[in-house]
Image (cartoon, rainbow, N blue to C red):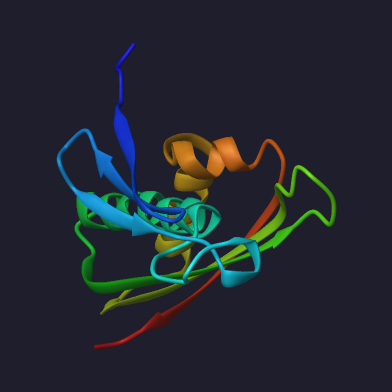
Length: 141
């Protein structure tokens, strides 16, 4: 099994610096209502960013391996959290805007389906608590 590491260190107040095992960093904080200063991304937002990134990488790789001319991919991810603790995500919607030359619905649908069902560890894991839906649009450059 491959091990993935991260380190989270207090900066001040409840502002935190997260460092990935690959050496990249992100500042996290909370809203003022819970003692933060709104100086960084919320940890739960990072989960949605991670899912969007994971799935986008899959979609791009699948389309490019199929020799499709993809020039851009944008994923917009929206989540709804439970009303009570633990406030897990219960619904997530991810919308892909894929830009490329001569892309077909069939190719984009296949790439998204493979990501959702086989490759995207983040969305498969979040799917254990959340109902996940996806949509897409194709644009010409």
